Structures are given as C-alpha cells and as structure tokens.
Amino acid sequence: MTVERLKEAYSIFNQAISDSELEIGDFRYWDYSNDYNGKIFASKYIIPYLKGVKKVNSREYSAIESLDRTATSFWVVGIQKYTMSNGMVFAVRTTVYEGADRQKSFAAIAVDINGYKKPNRMGRDVFIMSLYPYVEGYKKKKLVFGNHEQCGNGAHHYLLSRNSLVNSGCGTCNSNHSGYGFACGLLIQMDGWQIKNDYPW
Image (tube, rainbow, N blue to C red; front, side):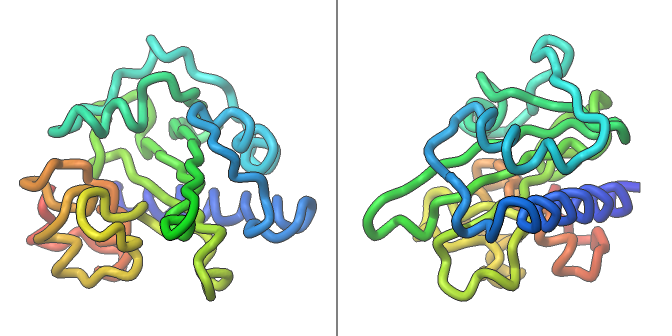
C-alpha cells in the first residue's frame, strides 16, 4: 500500500507541475522567492492544477514524529497544509540560496500519503519531493524525491548512491543518523518501487 500511494502522489504532483508549465511556463523561471509558509508558491503553481484541495487546520493534523526535532520545525511548524480529494495531506515551502549555494535553492512538497492516519513520520508515510530550478541540466528530471544532504556537503539526494542514502548523512534515509528521512522516497524509487528488507526505517 505504501509504494502504491507513494507512486500515486509522485504522479499527481508531476502532472500538476507539467500542467502548470503549460499555462505559466518553464518551472526554472517560476518565482522561488523565500516563502516559508509555501502559500504563495502553492497557490500559484501547484494548487490550481490539483483536484479537491482544501486547507487543513493545523490542530487537525498531528506533527511529524521525527527523531530529530529540527525536522519537525523545518516542515511542520507554521507551514500551511492542504488535503486532496484522495485524502493525502501536503505542504509546500521554498528556500532560495545565494552565491555558491544557489543550486541548492528549491521548492519542496512534503506529502503524507495516508493523510490523518498515523504514524505521520518521515520515511513511513511522509515523503519529500523537490524542484531545483538552478541546477544545470536539470530540466529532464523536474520533480525528484528527496531534498539535499542537510549536514554534509549539501549534495542533492538524487545524485547520491544507494549506499549513501542508507548509511550516511543526515537528511537522507538513515534512521540512525538524525532521522530526517527526507530521501526515503528516492530510495524506494531507486529500488524499483520496492521496500527492500534493508529499508532503514
């Protein structure tokens, strides 16, 4: 069920982005101005291309139970959440970096594939997908699972090896290392849309 719902979410948001591009233009030229709550970006580029979206009262949705509380504040506190007609809950945020870190600028979607049901935890039912508008040669990829390595060299998750995703770095998919779980969706996709026996969550 987890894999099927994850594939569904990935398909839905990829389609929304493609539809948005048809009307607004190439995602690389969208406005990625720092938008912590994600309201501006979501309302312009994402929500109009989804069906049955409604705002969620934060009190109705329990916070992500992260092993590292930073992940909770990073993705949940103060960020507007939405529900879709299929019951999934999602949130959007953007961050723009300057100078040498510009390629880390992103718009990210955190999606809870089973909505209000527990555990509401990264790597279990909450997964991250990101757009990186300033990465050279990135056009073919568009929306990718993961974000970027949070306390290492800042490498984008989609460029890391499977071994790195499972065994090293915070913000990957290693339940024993800060526990963010940001790249767990990527690991499932990398494994041919399977949750293998060594899945670390």
